[in-house]
Amino acid sequence: MRFGPRADGELPKINARLRSGPPPQSTVTISQSAVSERPLRTAITTAEMKNHLLSLTLATALISAGGAHAQFVLTEGSNPFEPSFRGDANTTYFGWTDGTFDGTPDNELVDDPAVTLGTAIPGISLTQVGTNDILASSNNIYSPGFATLNLVIPTAGTVGSGFTTIIIQGRATSGGMPGLTTAPVFGSINGVAPEFISGGNSAGKTQWWAKYELPGNAATYAVTLDLPGSGNLAPVSIASFTVETLWSADGYADDFLIAAVPEPGTYAVGAILVLCAAMARRRRVAR
Image 1 (cartoon, rainbow, N blue to C red):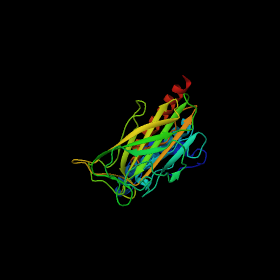
Image 2: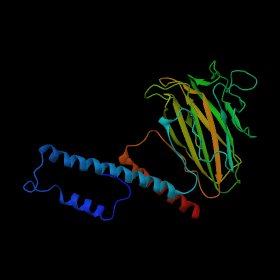
Image 3: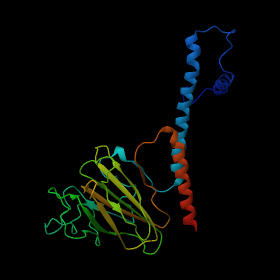
Image 4: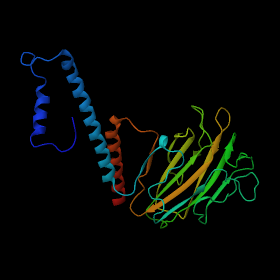
C-alpha cells in the first residue's frame, strides 16, 4: 500500500476490500500460496502504516511543545552534543577539551585550568578537593580512587526570576566495563537533582549528560562531582567536559538525551510524555 495523494474514491474502495476480506473460494480460484500470502501482506502494510502514523504523532507533539528543543541519541554521538540554545541571548557556554585539565602552574592538580571551549566568563571555577594526583600523563582527569571536583557555573540571566537550565556533559578516554561506574556522580543544586544519563557513545567511549532545571536564577551556581573510582568500581576518566546554561522568563529548555533509538512501537508513548511535559511546564509558567 502506498502513501500520498489518492484518486477520488480509491480509499473507500480499498477500505471496503479490507473489511470484506478475500473473495470466497467458490467464486475465484487462486493458488494456495496467494491465499497464505494475503494475510501476511496485510499485516506488514498495517505495521508500516502504524509506524508512519506514530512517527507523525511524535513530531506533532514536539512541535506543539513550542520553544527551543532538541533530542539527542547517545549512541549516535562521539562527543558532547550542542544544545539548541547555544549562542542565544541569556546563555553561557564553556568547557575543556582533551588534555587541558592541568591548572596553572603545571602541578598535576585540577585547580582552575584555563577554559579551552566556549567563552572564559568571569566566575568559572573547576577545582579538586585535596592534593591527590588525579591527572593522567595526557593531562586528562583519571581517578582510580575516590575524588571530588567542585564546579562553579556563572549564568547570564535576571537574578531571582524566570527559569534556569544547566546542561553538563562529558566524555571519557575509553569505554567502561559492564556494570562498573565510569561517570561522575553529580550533587544537587539548591536541592534539585539532575536528569542524568550515561552510556557508550558511537565510538565506544563512556559519555554522560546531566541536566538541571532550576526555578529562578542566581549569578552563579556551585555543584560537586564525585569520582567514585575505588574498590570494585572502575576508574573515572574525563577527556572532554562542557557546561551550558540558559535563562528564560518563560520556561526551561526542552533539550533531552536518550540512550538509544526506541523501537517504533514506543514512539506514541514518547510523544505523549513530551506533550504532557510541555503542558505541565506551561501550567507552571502560567502560575
